[in-house]
Length: 542
Ligand code: F6P
Image 1: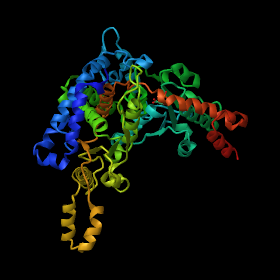
Image 2: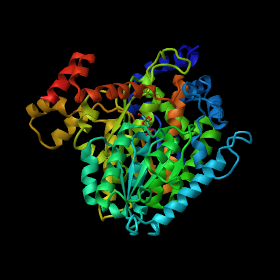
Image 3: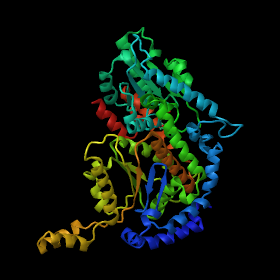
Image 4: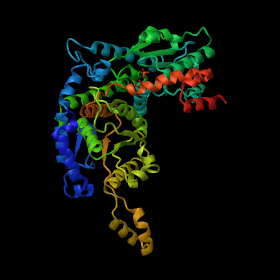
Protein backbone atom coordinates (compact mmCIF):
# COMPACT_ATOMS: atom_id res chain seq x y z
CA UNK A 1 0.00 0.00 0.00
CA UNK A 2 1.36 3.44 -0.83
CA UNK A 3 1.26 6.18 1.77
CA UNK A 4 -1.39 8.09 -0.19
CA UNK A 5 -3.82 5.19 0.36
CA UNK A 6 -3.43 5.36 4.13
CA UNK A 7 -6.21 6.47 6.47
CA UNK A 8 -4.02 9.29 7.80
CA UNK A 9 -3.36 10.67 4.31
CA UNK A 10 -7.15 10.82 3.76
CA UNK A 11 -7.57 12.50 7.17
CA UNK A 12 -4.94 15.07 6.23
CA UNK A 13 -6.78 15.77 2.95
CA UNK A 14 -9.97 16.43 4.89
CA UNK A 15 -8.08 18.52 7.42
CA UNK A 16 -6.57 20.56 4.57
CA UNK A 17 -10.06 21.60 3.54
CA UNK A 18 -10.67 23.06 6.99
CA UNK A 19 -7.27 24.69 7.08
CA UNK A 20 -7.70 26.27 3.66
CA UNK A 21 -10.40 28.48 5.13
CA UNK A 22 -8.15 29.58 7.98
CA UNK A 23 -5.81 32.52 7.74
CA UNK A 24 -2.59 32.82 9.75
CA UNK A 25 -4.16 35.97 11.22
CA UNK A 26 -6.92 33.81 12.73
CA UNK A 27 -4.50 31.16 13.92
CA UNK A 28 -2.43 33.71 15.83
CA UNK A 29 -5.47 35.59 17.13
CA UNK A 30 -7.01 32.35 18.40
CA UNK A 31 -3.90 31.08 20.18
CA UNK A 32 -1.76 33.48 22.19
CA UNK A 33 0.70 30.63 22.92
CA UNK A 34 1.18 29.82 19.25
CA UNK A 35 4.68 31.24 18.77
CA UNK A 36 5.99 29.36 21.79
CA UNK A 37 4.23 26.11 21.17
CA UNK A 38 5.05 25.91 17.48
CA UNK A 39 8.77 26.30 17.82
CA UNK A 40 11.61 24.04 18.89
CA UNK A 41 15.13 24.74 19.94
CA UNK A 42 18.26 22.70 19.68
CA UNK A 43 21.53 23.95 21.15
CA UNK A 44 22.01 27.40 19.59
CA UNK A 45 19.27 27.04 16.97
CA UNK A 46 15.71 28.26 17.36
CA UNK A 47 13.29 26.81 14.82
CA UNK A 48 10.11 28.89 14.72
CA UNK A 49 7.43 27.30 12.52
CA UNK A 50 4.48 29.18 14.00
CA UNK A 51 4.01 31.04 10.70
CA UNK A 52 3.32 27.79 8.86
CA UNK A 53 -0.32 27.21 7.92
CA UNK A 54 -0.92 24.45 10.41
CA UNK A 55 -2.01 23.69 13.94
CA UNK A 56 -0.88 21.27 16.61
CA UNK A 57 -3.59 18.96 15.30
CA UNK A 58 -2.01 19.08 11.83
CA UNK A 59 1.35 18.17 13.32
CA UNK A 60 -0.16 15.29 15.26
CA UNK A 61 -1.59 13.85 12.06
CA UNK A 62 1.69 14.35 10.21
CA UNK A 63 3.61 12.58 12.96
CA UNK A 64 1.16 9.70 12.63
CA UNK A 65 1.77 9.68 8.89
CA UNK A 66 5.52 9.39 9.50
CA UNK A 67 4.87 6.29 11.61
CA UNK A 68 2.74 4.78 8.85
CA UNK A 69 5.54 5.47 6.37
CA UNK A 70 7.84 3.41 8.68
CA UNK A 71 10.08 6.37 9.38
CA UNK A 72 11.30 4.90 12.72
CA UNK A 73 12.36 1.74 10.91
CA UNK A 74 14.08 3.70 8.13
CA UNK A 75 16.05 5.72 10.67
CA UNK A 76 17.10 2.55 12.43
CA UNK A 77 18.14 0.96 9.16
CA UNK A 78 20.25 3.95 8.13
CA UNK A 79 22.10 4.05 11.47
CA UNK A 80 22.53 0.25 11.37
CA UNK A 81 24.36 0.49 8.03
CA UNK A 82 21.74 -1.43 6.01
CA UNK A 83 22.06 -1.09 2.25
CA UNK A 84 19.14 1.31 2.00
CA UNK A 85 20.54 2.87 -1.20
CA UNK A 86 19.14 -0.16 -3.01
CA UNK A 87 19.58 0.93 -6.62
CA UNK A 88 23.32 1.27 -6.01
CA UNK A 89 23.54 -1.54 -3.43
CA UNK A 90 25.14 0.74 -0.83
CA UNK A 91 24.84 1.63 2.82
CA UNK A 92 24.22 5.26 3.72
CA UNK A 93 26.71 6.14 6.42
CA UNK A 94 27.59 9.81 6.17
CA UNK A 95 26.66 9.98 9.87
CA UNK A 96 29.83 7.93 10.55
CA UNK A 97 31.89 10.82 9.23
CA UNK A 98 31.01 12.97 12.22
CA UNK A 99 31.56 10.36 14.89
CA UNK A 100 34.58 10.18 17.12
CA UNK A 101 34.62 6.61 18.40
CA UNK A 102 34.47 3.05 17.10
CA UNK A 103 32.71 0.79 16.39
CA UNK A 104 30.07 2.13 14.02
CA UNK A 105 27.63 1.01 12.72
CA UNK A 106 28.49 -2.25 14.54
CA UNK A 107 31.25 -4.64 15.52
CA UNK A 108 30.97 -6.69 12.31
CA UNK A 109 30.80 -3.75 9.92
CA UNK A 110 32.90 -0.96 11.42
CA UNK A 111 33.91 1.94 9.21
CA UNK A 112 35.39 4.04 11.98
CA UNK A 113 39.02 2.91 11.69
CA UNK A 114 39.10 4.27 8.12
CA UNK A 115 37.19 7.41 9.06
CA UNK A 116 39.39 8.32 12.02
CA UNK A 117 42.64 7.49 10.23
CA UNK A 118 41.65 9.67 7.27
CA UNK A 119 40.59 12.53 9.51
CA UNK A 120 44.00 12.34 11.23
CA UNK A 121 45.84 12.42 7.91
CA UNK A 122 43.73 15.38 6.80
CA UNK A 123 44.53 17.25 10.01
CA UNK A 124 48.25 16.59 9.64
CA UNK A 125 48.24 17.84 6.06
CA UNK A 126 46.09 20.86 6.95
CA UNK A 127 48.38 21.81 9.85
CA UNK A 128 51.43 21.53 7.61
CA UNK A 129 49.89 23.93 5.11
CA UNK A 130 48.65 26.29 7.78
CA UNK A 131 52.09 26.39 9.36
CA UNK A 132 53.69 27.31 6.02
CA UNK A 133 55.58 24.00 6.00
CA UNK A 134 54.20 22.63 2.77
CA UNK A 135 56.44 23.66 -0.09
CA UNK A 136 56.06 24.05 -3.81
CA UNK A 137 58.57 23.22 -6.52
CA UNK A 138 60.99 26.02 -5.66
CA UNK A 139 60.82 25.38 -1.94
CA UNK A 140 58.47 28.28 -1.33
CA UNK A 141 55.59 27.82 1.10
CA UNK A 142 52.17 27.13 -0.42
CA UNK A 143 49.94 30.21 -0.09
CA UNK A 144 46.98 29.39 -2.32
CA UNK A 145 44.90 26.24 -2.28
CA UNK A 146 42.47 25.60 -5.15
CA UNK A 147 39.71 23.02 -4.69
CA UNK A 148 38.77 21.59 -8.08
CA UNK A 149 35.49 19.69 -7.90
CA UNK A 150 31.81 20.05 -8.75
CA UNK A 151 28.42 19.27 -7.18
CA UNK A 152 28.96 17.57 -3.83
CA UNK A 153 32.72 17.88 -4.32
CA UNK A 154 32.41 21.66 -4.33
CA UNK A 155 29.15 23.03 -2.94
CA UNK A 156 29.42 21.75 0.65
CA UNK A 157 33.00 22.84 1.41
CA UNK A 158 32.55 26.11 -0.50
CA UNK A 159 29.32 26.93 1.33
CA UNK A 160 30.82 26.10 4.73
CA UNK A 161 34.08 27.93 3.94
CA UNK A 162 32.09 31.08 3.22
CA UNK A 163 29.91 30.56 6.29
CA UNK A 164 32.96 30.17 8.53
CA UNK A 165 35.19 32.74 6.87
CA UNK A 166 35.55 34.51 10.21
CA UNK A 167 37.56 31.44 11.32
CA UNK A 168 39.74 31.33 8.21
CA UNK A 169 43.55 31.27 8.30
CA UNK A 170 44.82 34.87 8.08
CA UNK A 171 47.07 34.44 5.06
CA UNK A 172 46.39 31.12 3.32
CA UNK A 173 43.85 31.64 0.55
CA UNK A 174 41.41 28.89 -0.44
CA UNK A 175 39.56 29.01 -3.77
CA UNK A 176 36.90 26.80 -5.35
CA UNK A 177 36.68 26.04 -9.06
CA UNK A 178 33.84 23.95 -10.47
CA UNK A 179 32.71 25.30 -13.81
CA UNK A 180 33.85 23.94 -17.16
CA UNK A 181 33.64 27.50 -18.38
CA UNK A 182 37.23 28.75 -18.53
CA UNK A 183 35.88 32.08 -17.32
CA UNK A 184 36.12 30.73 -13.79
CA UNK A 185 39.59 29.16 -13.82
CA UNK A 186 41.42 31.50 -16.22
CA UNK A 187 41.00 34.74 -14.22
CA UNK A 188 41.86 32.89 -11.01
CA UNK A 189 45.09 31.52 -12.51
CA UNK A 190 46.08 35.08 -13.43
CA UNK A 191 46.09 35.94 -9.74
CA UNK A 192 48.08 32.90 -8.61
CA UNK A 193 51.78 32.18 -8.36
CA UNK A 194 52.40 28.63 -9.65
CA UNK A 195 55.33 28.22 -7.23
CA UNK A 196 53.05 28.64 -4.23
CA UNK A 197 49.80 27.06 -5.43
CA UNK A 198 48.38 23.68 -4.48
CA UNK A 199 45.43 22.12 -6.31
CA UNK A 200 43.17 19.60 -4.57
CA UNK A 201 41.31 17.54 -7.15
CA UNK A 202 38.14 16.33 -5.48
CA UNK A 203 36.09 13.76 -7.28
CA UNK A 204 34.53 10.64 -5.86
CA UNK A 205 34.62 8.97 -9.26
CA UNK A 206 37.66 10.82 -10.66
CA UNK A 207 35.96 10.79 -14.05
CA UNK A 208 33.68 13.85 -13.83
CA UNK A 209 34.30 15.84 -17.00
CA UNK A 210 34.26 19.31 -15.45
CA UNK A 211 36.74 18.35 -12.75
CA UNK A 212 39.04 16.43 -15.06
CA UNK A 213 39.19 19.25 -17.63
CA UNK A 214 39.94 21.85 -14.93
CA UNK A 215 42.56 19.58 -13.31
CA UNK A 216 44.23 19.01 -16.68
CA UNK A 217 44.36 22.76 -17.30
CA UNK A 218 45.87 23.30 -13.84
CA UNK A 219 48.51 20.67 -14.58
CA UNK A 220 49.37 22.30 -17.92
CA UNK A 221 49.54 25.71 -16.30
CA UNK A 222 52.02 24.42 -13.71
CA UNK A 223 54.15 22.77 -16.40
CA UNK A 224 54.16 25.76 -18.70
CA UNK A 225 55.10 28.13 -15.87
CA UNK A 226 57.50 25.97 -13.89
CA UNK A 227 58.96 23.86 -16.69
CA UNK A 228 58.38 20.25 -17.66
CA UNK A 229 60.70 19.09 -14.92
CA UNK A 230 58.35 20.43 -12.21
CA UNK A 231 57.56 17.87 -9.54
CA UNK A 232 53.77 17.96 -9.79
CA UNK A 233 53.45 15.93 -6.62
CA UNK A 234 54.29 19.11 -4.69
CA UNK A 235 51.36 20.94 -6.22
CA UNK A 236 48.54 18.39 -6.11
CA UNK A 237 46.47 16.51 -3.60
CA UNK A 238 43.34 14.51 -4.35
CA UNK A 239 40.22 13.13 -2.72
CA UNK A 240 38.57 10.16 -4.35
CA UNK A 241 37.08 6.72 -3.89
CA UNK A 242 39.30 5.68 -6.83
CA UNK A 243 42.82 6.40 -5.55
CA UNK A 244 44.44 4.55 -8.48
CA UNK A 245 42.93 7.09 -10.89
CA UNK A 246 44.26 9.99 -8.82
CA UNK A 247 47.70 8.38 -8.75
CA UNK A 248 47.59 7.86 -12.52
CA UNK A 249 46.85 11.57 -12.89
CA UNK A 250 50.09 12.32 -11.06
CA UNK A 251 49.07 12.80 -7.46
CA UNK A 252 51.48 11.32 -4.96
CA UNK A 253 49.88 8.37 -3.09
CA UNK A 254 50.48 9.96 0.29
CA UNK A 255 48.41 12.94 -0.80
CA UNK A 256 45.40 10.97 -1.98
CA UNK A 257 42.66 10.95 0.62
CA UNK A 258 39.91 8.35 0.43
CA UNK A 259 36.15 8.52 0.46
CA UNK A 260 33.94 5.48 0.36
CA UNK A 261 30.97 4.27 -1.63
CA UNK A 262 28.73 4.62 1.44
CA UNK A 263 29.07 8.44 1.27
CA UNK A 264 26.88 10.20 -1.28
CA UNK A 265 28.54 13.19 -2.97
CA UNK A 266 26.03 15.67 -1.58
CA UNK A 267 26.53 14.24 1.93
CA UNK A 268 30.33 14.27 1.77
CA UNK A 269 31.23 17.66 3.25
CA UNK A 270 32.23 15.87 6.48
CA UNK A 271 34.73 13.58 4.78
CA UNK A 272 38.04 14.32 3.06
CA UNK A 273 35.91 16.20 0.52
CA UNK A 274 36.04 18.91 3.19
CA UNK A 275 39.87 19.00 3.08
CA UNK A 276 40.07 22.52 1.59
CA UNK A 277 37.61 23.68 4.26
CA UNK A 278 39.73 22.09 6.99
CA UNK A 279 42.80 23.83 5.59
CA UNK A 280 40.93 27.14 5.70
CA UNK A 281 39.40 26.92 9.17
CA UNK A 282 41.78 24.46 10.86
CA UNK A 283 41.23 20.96 12.24
CA UNK A 284 39.85 22.23 15.55
CA UNK A 285 37.01 24.24 14.00
CA UNK A 286 36.40 21.37 11.55
CA UNK A 287 36.00 18.98 14.50
CA UNK A 288 33.61 21.44 16.16
CA UNK A 289 31.52 21.40 13.00
CA UNK A 290 31.49 17.58 13.06
CA UNK A 291 30.48 17.57 16.71
CA UNK A 292 27.55 19.86 15.96
CA UNK A 293 26.40 17.50 13.22
CA UNK A 294 26.90 14.50 15.50
CA UNK A 295 24.67 16.11 18.15
CA UNK A 296 21.96 16.61 15.53
CA UNK A 297 22.34 12.95 14.45
CA UNK A 298 21.79 11.80 18.00
CA UNK A 299 18.78 14.09 18.36
CA UNK A 300 17.32 12.78 15.09
CA UNK A 301 17.89 9.16 16.14
CA UNK A 302 16.47 9.45 19.64
CA UNK A 303 14.10 12.42 20.11
CA UNK A 304 10.35 11.75 20.04
CA UNK A 305 8.99 12.82 16.66
CA UNK A 306 6.93 15.69 18.09
CA UNK A 307 10.15 17.30 19.41
CA UNK A 308 12.44 16.14 16.64
CA UNK A 309 13.61 19.07 14.50
CA UNK A 310 14.42 17.19 11.28
CA UNK A 311 11.22 15.18 11.54
CA UNK A 312 9.05 18.24 12.09
CA UNK A 313 10.83 20.18 9.36
CA UNK A 314 10.44 17.32 6.92
CA UNK A 315 6.78 16.85 7.77
CA UNK A 316 6.03 20.55 7.39
CA UNK A 317 7.48 20.27 3.88
CA UNK A 318 5.19 17.30 3.22
CA UNK A 319 2.21 19.33 4.43
CA UNK A 320 3.11 22.29 2.21
CA UNK A 321 3.85 20.18 -0.87
CA UNK A 322 1.30 17.42 -0.73
CA UNK A 323 -1.62 19.09 1.00
CA UNK A 324 -1.31 22.84 0.44
CA UNK A 325 -0.02 22.36 -3.12
CA UNK A 326 3.25 24.31 -2.90
CA UNK A 327 5.63 23.53 -5.74
CA UNK A 328 8.66 25.48 -4.57
CA UNK A 329 10.54 26.25 -1.35
CA UNK A 330 12.55 29.45 -0.98
CA UNK A 331 15.69 29.52 1.16
CA UNK A 332 16.38 33.08 2.30
CA UNK A 333 19.49 33.62 4.42
CA UNK A 334 19.83 36.97 6.16
CA UNK A 335 23.56 36.64 6.53
CA UNK A 336 26.08 37.33 3.78
CA UNK A 337 28.22 34.44 5.00
CA UNK A 338 25.39 32.04 4.13
CA UNK A 339 25.23 33.16 0.51
CA UNK A 340 26.01 29.71 -0.88
CA UNK A 341 23.50 27.91 1.35
CA UNK A 342 20.66 28.02 -1.21
CA UNK A 343 22.81 26.34 -3.90
CA UNK A 344 24.04 23.74 -1.44
CA UNK A 345 20.48 22.94 -0.35
CA UNK A 346 19.34 22.83 -3.95
CA UNK A 347 21.64 19.90 -4.62
CA UNK A 348 20.96 18.26 -1.27
CA UNK A 349 17.19 18.35 -1.68
CA UNK A 350 16.62 18.19 -5.42
CA UNK A 351 19.26 15.59 -6.26
CA UNK A 352 18.07 13.48 -3.33
CA UNK A 353 14.32 13.70 -3.67
CA UNK A 354 13.66 15.02 -7.18
CA UNK A 355 12.30 11.62 -8.22
CA UNK A 356 8.99 10.15 -9.28
CA UNK A 357 9.78 6.45 -8.97
CA UNK A 358 9.53 4.66 -5.65
CA UNK A 359 12.31 2.69 -4.02
CA UNK A 360 10.56 -0.42 -5.36
CA UNK A 361 10.54 0.97 -8.90
CA UNK A 362 6.85 1.95 -9.09
CA UNK A 363 5.53 5.38 -10.04
CA UNK A 364 5.08 7.64 -7.01
CA UNK A 365 1.47 8.81 -6.91
CA UNK A 366 2.02 12.15 -5.19
CA UNK A 367 4.20 15.23 -5.62
CA UNK A 368 7.75 14.86 -4.32
CA UNK A 369 10.58 17.37 -3.89
CA UNK A 370 9.60 21.01 -4.43
CA UNK A 371 11.85 23.26 -6.47
CA UNK A 372 14.32 24.64 -3.96
CA UNK A 373 15.64 28.07 -4.78
CA UNK A 374 16.77 31.14 -2.96
CA UNK A 375 19.07 34.08 -2.50
CA UNK A 376 20.29 36.31 0.26
CA UNK A 377 17.02 37.55 1.75
CA UNK A 378 17.87 41.21 2.10
CA UNK A 379 18.88 41.45 -1.58
CA UNK A 380 15.86 39.39 -2.62
CA UNK A 381 13.52 41.90 -0.97
CA UNK A 382 14.47 44.40 -3.64
CA UNK A 383 14.22 41.89 -6.45
CA UNK A 384 11.76 39.00 -6.28
CA UNK A 385 9.88 39.39 -2.99
CA UNK A 386 7.14 41.27 -4.89
CA UNK A 387 5.96 37.90 -6.19
CA UNK A 388 6.08 36.35 -2.73
CA UNK A 389 3.86 39.12 -1.40
CA UNK A 390 1.39 39.60 -4.22
CA UNK A 391 2.04 36.98 -6.90
CA UNK A 392 -0.83 34.83 -5.66
CA UNK A 393 1.22 31.62 -5.38
CA UNK A 394 2.03 29.71 -2.26
CA UNK A 395 5.80 29.81 -1.76
CA UNK A 396 6.91 28.42 1.61
CA UNK A 397 10.03 30.21 2.79
CA UNK A 398 12.88 29.32 5.15
CA UNK A 399 14.24 32.51 6.72
CA UNK A 400 17.69 31.85 8.19
CA UNK A 401 19.58 34.40 10.27
CA UNK A 402 22.10 34.67 13.09
CA UNK A 403 21.45 36.84 16.13
CA UNK A 404 25.03 38.04 16.25
CA UNK A 405 27.17 38.98 13.29
CA UNK A 406 30.81 38.11 12.77
CA UNK A 407 31.19 41.57 11.22
CA UNK A 408 29.41 43.87 13.67
CA UNK A 409 29.37 47.28 11.99
CA UNK A 410 27.35 49.75 14.06
CA UNK A 411 23.71 49.87 13.00
CA UNK A 412 23.80 46.93 10.59
CA UNK A 413 22.78 43.80 12.45
CA UNK A 414 19.57 45.04 14.08
CA UNK A 415 18.51 46.65 10.80
CA UNK A 416 19.16 43.38 8.99
CA UNK A 417 17.24 41.32 11.53
CA UNK A 418 14.33 43.74 11.56
CA UNK A 419 14.05 43.27 7.81
CA UNK A 420 14.13 39.51 8.22
CA UNK A 421 11.40 39.53 10.87
CA UNK A 422 9.37 42.15 8.96
CA UNK A 423 9.30 40.07 5.81
CA UNK A 424 8.08 36.87 7.42
CA UNK A 425 5.51 38.88 9.36
CA UNK A 426 4.28 40.78 6.28
CA UNK A 427 4.11 37.54 4.30
CA UNK A 428 2.09 35.85 7.04
CA UNK A 429 -0.31 38.62 8.00
CA UNK A 430 -0.49 40.80 4.91
CA UNK A 431 -2.55 43.96 4.93
CA UNK A 432 -6.32 43.86 4.57
CA UNK A 433 -8.47 46.21 2.53
CA UNK A 434 -9.69 48.01 5.61
CA UNK A 435 -6.16 48.39 6.97
CA UNK A 436 -5.01 49.81 3.62
CA UNK A 437 -7.99 52.17 3.49
CA UNK A 438 -7.40 53.34 7.04
CA UNK A 439 -3.71 54.05 6.48
CA UNK A 440 -4.41 55.92 3.23
CA UNK A 441 -7.08 57.99 4.89
CA UNK A 442 -4.62 58.85 7.66
CA UNK A 443 -2.23 60.04 4.95
CA UNK A 444 -5.12 62.22 3.63
CA UNK A 445 -5.17 60.53 0.25
CA UNK A 446 -8.08 61.73 -1.88
CA UNK A 447 -11.07 59.30 -1.89
CA UNK A 448 -10.85 58.64 -5.68
CA UNK A 449 -7.17 57.82 -5.35
CA UNK A 450 -7.91 55.49 -2.43
CA UNK A 451 -10.40 53.64 -4.61
CA UNK A 452 -7.91 53.39 -7.49
CA UNK A 453 -4.94 52.26 -5.41
CA UNK A 454 -6.71 50.02 -2.93
CA UNK A 455 -6.50 46.76 -4.93
CA UNK A 456 -2.79 47.34 -5.60
CA UNK A 457 -1.93 47.95 -1.99
CA UNK A 458 -3.69 44.99 -0.43
CA UNK A 459 -1.51 42.08 0.74
CA UNK A 460 -3.31 38.76 1.01
CA UNK A 461 -0.76 37.36 3.47
CA UNK A 462 -1.08 33.74 4.60
CA UNK A 463 2.26 32.93 3.00
CA UNK A 464 3.84 30.16 5.12
CA UNK A 465 7.37 30.46 6.44
CA UNK A 466 9.71 29.16 9.11
CA UNK A 467 12.52 31.08 10.74
CA UNK A 468 15.74 29.43 11.78
CA UNK A 469 17.57 31.71 14.15
CA UNK A 470 21.14 30.78 15.05
CA UNK A 471 22.91 32.49 17.93
CA UNK A 472 26.08 32.86 15.88
CA UNK A 473 27.65 31.24 12.86
CA UNK A 474 29.78 28.96 15.02
CA UNK A 475 31.20 25.78 13.44
CA UNK A 476 29.15 23.52 15.71
CA UNK A 477 25.93 25.41 15.04
CA UNK A 478 26.47 25.23 11.29
CA UNK A 479 27.28 21.52 11.55
CA UNK A 480 23.95 21.02 13.31
CA UNK A 481 22.13 23.15 10.73
CA UNK A 482 23.43 21.18 7.75
CA UNK A 483 22.74 17.83 9.45
CA UNK A 484 19.24 19.11 10.19
CA UNK A 485 18.59 19.66 6.48
CA UNK A 486 20.19 16.32 5.57
CA UNK A 487 17.84 14.48 7.90
CA UNK A 488 14.87 16.55 6.76
CA UNK A 489 15.55 15.21 3.27
CA UNK A 490 15.69 11.68 4.67
CA UNK A 491 12.33 12.12 6.42
CA UNK A 492 10.68 13.30 3.23
CA UNK A 493 12.24 10.52 1.15
CA UNK A 494 10.84 7.98 3.63
CA UNK A 495 7.33 9.45 3.45
CA UNK A 496 7.39 9.63 -0.35
CA UNK A 497 8.82 6.10 -0.45
CA UNK A 498 11.79 7.05 -2.62
CA UNK A 499 15.51 6.35 -2.48
CA UNK A 500 17.08 9.69 -1.54
CA UNK A 501 20.61 8.46 -2.16
CA UNK A 502 20.92 7.68 -5.86
CA UNK A 503 20.91 10.20 -8.75
CA UNK A 504 20.24 8.36 -12.00
CA UNK A 505 18.64 11.48 -13.41
CA UNK A 506 22.02 13.14 -13.95
CA UNK A 507 23.33 10.39 -16.23
CA UNK A 508 21.54 11.01 -19.53
CA UNK A 509 22.82 14.55 -20.02
CA UNK A 510 26.40 13.44 -19.30
CA UNK A 511 26.17 10.65 -21.88
CA UNK A 512 24.66 12.91 -24.54
CA UNK A 513 27.32 15.59 -23.92
CA UNK A 514 30.07 13.05 -24.49
CA UNK A 515 28.50 12.10 -27.85
CA UNK A 516 28.03 15.73 -28.92
CA UNK A 517 31.61 16.82 -28.13
CA UNK A 518 33.30 15.09 -31.12
CA UNK A 519 30.68 16.62 -33.45
CA UNK A 520 32.31 20.03 -32.97
CA UNK A 521 35.35 18.74 -34.89
CA UNK A 522 33.60 16.32 -37.20
CA UNK A 523 30.43 17.78 -38.75
CA UNK A 524 29.50 14.40 -40.22
CA UNK A 525 28.69 13.20 -36.69
CA UNK A 526 26.07 15.92 -36.23
CA UNK A 527 23.49 14.08 -38.34
CA UNK A 528 23.02 11.62 -35.46
CA UNK A 529 21.38 14.33 -33.33
CA UNK A 530 17.96 15.94 -33.28
CA UNK A 531 17.25 18.91 -35.55
CA UNK A 532 17.66 21.51 -32.85
CA UNK A 533 21.07 20.17 -31.75
CA UNK A 534 22.20 20.00 -35.39
CA UNK A 535 21.19 23.63 -35.91
CA UNK A 536 22.99 24.76 -32.74
CA UNK A 537 26.16 22.94 -33.79
CA UNK A 538 25.94 24.43 -37.28
CA UNK A 539 25.57 27.92 -35.81
CA UNK A 540 28.70 27.42 -33.67
CA UNK A 541 30.67 26.20 -36.70
CA UNK A 542 29.71 29.29 -38.67
O1 F6P B 1 26.53 14.56 -11.67
C1 F6P B 1 26.11 14.55 -10.36
C2 F6P B 1 27.21 14.13 -9.44
O2 F6P B 1 27.48 12.78 -9.56
C3 F6P B 1 26.89 14.50 -8.01
O3 F6P B 1 26.07 13.58 -7.39
C4 F6P B 1 28.24 14.62 -7.41
O4 F6P B 1 28.22 15.33 -6.21
C5 F6P B 1 28.96 15.35 -8.52
O5 F6P B 1 28.42 14.83 -9.70
C6 F6P B 1 30.46 15.19 -8.52
O6 F6P B 1 30.84 13.85 -8.66
P1 F6P B 1 32.32 13.41 -8.41
O7 F6P B 1 32.65 13.70 -6.99
O8 F6P B 1 32.36 11.94 -8.72
O9 F6P B 1 33.20 14.19 -9.35
